[in-house]
Figure 1 (cartoon, rainbow, N blue to C red):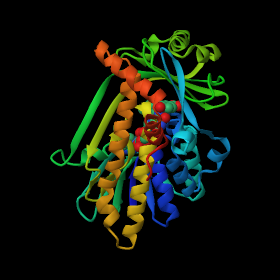
Figure 2: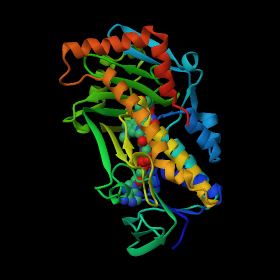
Figure 3: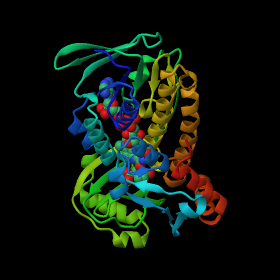
Figure 4: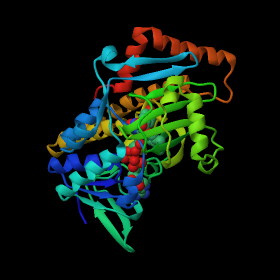
Amino acid sequence: MKTQVAIIGGGPSGLLLSQLLNRAGIATVVLERQTRAHVLSRIRAGVLEQGTVRMLHEAGCGARMEKEGHPHHGCYLSTAEGRFRVDFTEACGREVMVYGQTEMTRDLYEAQDAIGATILHEVSDVVLHDVETGNPHVTFTKDGQSHRLDCDWIAGCDGFHGVSRKTIPETVRKEFERVYPFGWLGILSRTKPAADELVYANHPRGFALASMRNDALSRYYIQVPLTDKVEDWSDAAFWDELRARLPADVAAALETGTSIEKSIAPLRSFVSEPMRWGRLFLVGDAAHIVPPTGAKGLNLAVSDVHYLYEALVAAQSGDMSGVEHYSDRALKRVWAAMRFSWWMTSILHRFPDQSTFDQRIQETELHMLRDVPSAQETMARNYVGLPF
Ligand code: RFL
Ligand code: PHB
């Protein structure tokens, strides 16, 4: 089997890259470990930056998002003293789009089907070979048969637990990591959202987030210790805890119901450098993880795709500068999002070892955000997404 770009992983990064490259006349094969149904069952991100929205349009799959997505012009933050709003439009002239990653993935699959792109599901034993030479290839197993895929380039879009990153020798790879001492317990429920915009709550009992997918589908999270298990949390216990942490008016408006998904995600900041090794490029979660507090993970994956797409199109006509600079360009934006996600996490959560001094600093950060326009502008610029 032969293609131009072998794409490992068919999550949002892999599908978007495949879609853009195919439209530019560059052949791809996507190798995905899971079934399509499994990929579409994952409930993850909900907030898209304008750059992400632009890329989906560029890929020819933005129509449903434009119709069903909800532009949000601000968000609420709450402290023990009540809630305040950061108006993104006023602070920086831009906004975000609330549209689920699941829906975006569905749109990408449909667009890929329409152009007859090759996506192989349920592949296993994926191994990347000769990536530092001009002739890389990938071997894998599908339906019990071994296969070899020859290619010009390999895009490692296989997430944090994938094989691509580990193909880069340990002597070359530098990893930077912070693991947070808590996780997020999230639920999805067919209920009307408790507020008109997202509410990020700092509360003595721990962080809480009220988010949404649409007018009839809500997504809520609460900070929990890493030792907690999903089974420890009945729906009733979750709703009680969420209500206790949200501002009183939002809690009063909270509609509860049966959860249709419930899971715990640990929080981590992680970067692997460089993001290119020979003919292998790392894209999205394969190279970096942010805690979800800044709503950046999916959006960073999309900006990586943008840089790589431009690089591979230019390489077609012999211009290798995008390939050479891919890692530096992507990492510059990655580290800015790392900083923002770390900062949002640090001002909103309760840390087990938090001193009274740390608490005052946290309160002061939130007061600045409430009272100082330049602090709001910095937050808003980062939240709606730095340009790419
Ligand atoms: P993904 O989505 O992990 O996809 C990787 C794909 O690779 C496949 N794979 C393999 N395939 C073949 N061979 C192998 N050896 C393979 N190993 C893995 C996997 O099956 C999978 O299909 O990575 P990608 O495409 O880079 O996309 C990244 C995003 O999914 C992620 O950053 C976001 O979901 C993060 N995130 C959020 N991002 C935002 O921008 N805004 C948000 O509001 C937001 N909220 C969230 C989030 C992530 C969360 N969780 C659960 C981690 C909220 C949560 C709770
Ligand atoms: C979500 O809706 O899943 C969501 C929204 C904002 C975040 C994280 C997750 O910061």
